[in-house]
Length: 417
Image 1 (cartoon, rainbow, N blue to C red):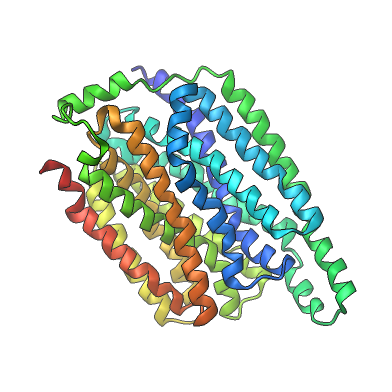
Image 2: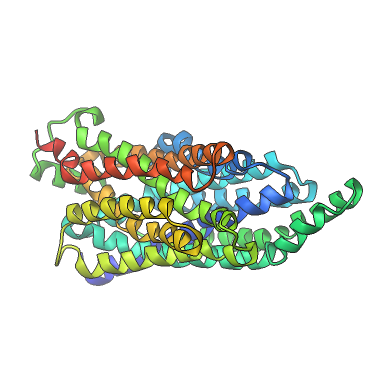
């Protein structure tokens, strides 16, 4: 495959990863915003993450079926349209300040992103030598991370610019005045999400008429034959993949906890919302630093396995440091979890789908379903926060990082037995 034939599809996929990051990390701002606008406790507010990410579990396998029927390019367009529909649902949700409709919009957004993720991740992995797959995914991670860093800043400026004043004011208002104030706060989300909807529809049309090539399964079978996996008859015969699904479940959970909890955690540490609303961007910036390290160093200076070992160790150290420190220092350690998390996805994905051959699309669907870890683990974090406090709730990420470390050391080798 020529350099141009590789570069052009990667640019298109890079744009899609920018969309993934932007839409996904809006939830970091939506959690404190909806907690205020819809008068929610911590557990209820983390249903934002649950509604968004549980769609990855429910729609993972249907997304694989859809891609087999529509093909790669048409499937990407369909996914973008679904995300646009979910974004549009925010308008009636805001007009009526109806939290369940916000959650439905988030679920539909997640369903669209499930289709996009199922198609794009194996494509990036296969488009070039497998030993440098983590490097290519790191490029995609930069696109994702830049968007993820921008999203909370842009949306936060639009809907949380006077959140501290509103929060203090609400306690002084009677019930009718309070409803008027909350309705005005809810309405702030309408224009941003109308703009997002329009951009997504335009991008869906552009992708539909682009020259993006298909991923051909016969090419995947060549890899399987070389790795001795051609005789496999079931996806259940790949233990390294099945364990990889669990590992990705844990990873996505800790990644979203780090990004989505840090705004509220900053407030817990006494930092005003007007300042802490930017903290998710700091987490994403530390992830970007990690992606740059991956691009420069993998596989030239260290392997995907080594990157995953180091990342899990850093995750343990930063989490424990956040728990045992206070104030801004503690918040900084939570932000540094972004650095620890940055090379996990690029390392886990290629290790998990290695040698799957014609089962690659099915394996990809299972891995995308594992993103539902971001639905359940943050919800557990929110529950512990309500019953103990946000700082002690970070203990739940430590065993997750330990298990990820096991996969890096030996778990991914189970396919060789």
